[in-house]
Amino acid sequence: MHLIQLLLPLHDNHKQAFPPDYFNQVREDLIDRFGGVTAFVRSPAVGLWKGNSDDINRDEMVMFEVLSDELDKDWWAGYRQKLEAKFRQDEVLIWASNITRL
Image (cartoon, rainbow, N blue to C red):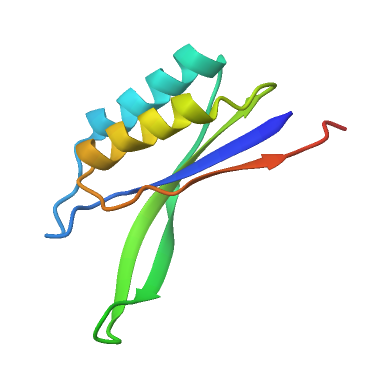
């Protein structure tokens, strides 16, 4: 079993919030594909990183996660590209972990 997680920003680079429909569509996409989704949208995570000028950058993000028996890397690569275009990001982080259901 695989736990697949992805992070999406709440705002663009100009501090404008993305429309709620963007996140609703991600939920629908993942429900349609995997039969369920967990979305952590009420308490956004805060990401901090150093840019080229050593300034600290900040992002507020929401996390989505799904469980899947199979890990279709090609589908995820295509979906990542779709999300990067929609959310105007250089990179959307998506990762998978092997898990054991207890």
